[in-house]
Image (cartoon, rainbow, N blue to C red; front, side, top):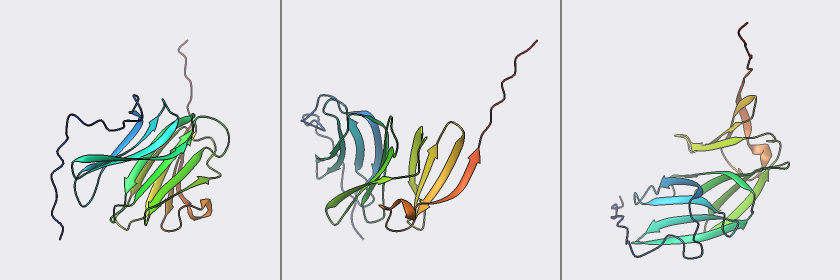
Length: 171
């Protein structure tokens, strides 16, 4: 059993020395083994998606990719501490991407067939399966992936709730 270490923030250290703008589209989780924070965020000043983890009293920041058009981002960590990030651009087709880091290597893949997504949310269930909720103007769709999540075909849509809105005006 690993001991939890103290997450003490040094007020003299900035999260990201590359940017004066850290905090756009931020998603934060707790690192399982340490209890320290990890975040995925969009650095709009430089147009980069970044991942940062606080460990041993300091932030480690990694730039994952460049895109000046991000609209949403979410992150979870699996039981081994591997980050899983979904992010979405604000326009175009094939707007949702999945990025993960396993054995020190980052990979990013576009999840096709999720057009129309307005918002997204990522979670991980007790079996270690990823669950992605996507919201469109008419649907809430839950998709699940248990392995090889870099491929769109491995994200199975399990539940869809279609919404309709009736506009009522009084006479």
